[in-house]
Image 1 (tube, one colour):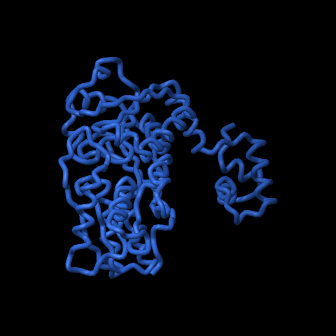
Image 2 (cartoon, rainbow, N blue to C red):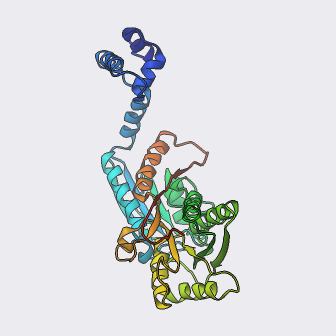
Length: 353
């Protein structure tokens, strides 16, 4: 006999809705009633539909070879904690699914790596550079390899690229940063970024600026390319570029900002140095707030950095889950982009005015 939720409800002498609430661990169900329903579930051997589907999906990925590719990125960028944390999440999730993971690197997307000539992977997880058009600039052989099987991008979906994607809600990260500064009493703020054409950083900047406008805050922009960015893309490491942008902010004929928002911790590290060189103290003179929560980069900063945690390891884990769903629906033509909600992590770098 096929056991359904209706079968469980009849044996437990409760409604289908009560069985559903028990399965979802709804606290409104009394402990005694919950125990009675669960006893019927165990006696009947009932398995919720979503668990059946998860088991089937698990079997579909077991034994498959999953390729993890970094595309158009210099090692200084691909080894940033925000990237390695996502890769750690991918490793754990792939291992738990019983699949095999192979790592690949393609710093120059215009070249066809030797590994594209070997037998391919069953699916791909890809981290691509988000500055410049990495997909349209990729070699046609590489495009064919990534288009032939299910593909999920993590931490950014390059324009025109096939497949699904998983990343942080970058707009919300900017919103949370602005709201935190507003709650701390800051009304004159600024955005500083040496990468104004990096799509993820721009999204954070736009969320920050829009929220500042909604809250009646004055927001100055110091966002300009002061160096040439080419593939393989590097991490921000030019102290002179950040210092130049900072000097531009401080010399403007406007009220000096009481706080500066930077869209990545790697930029915040440079800003700390630039402020110290100018004799400005954090947060006494200027507050600083950032995004990513890259503890490996910021552990030595004093005072501790207030940052937005984009939950990078969870991004990696969710990318694997979405790849499993792609195996379930290989002919799905619709693009799906999943976002992980960020979380503010307070430090000592923001002063309450």
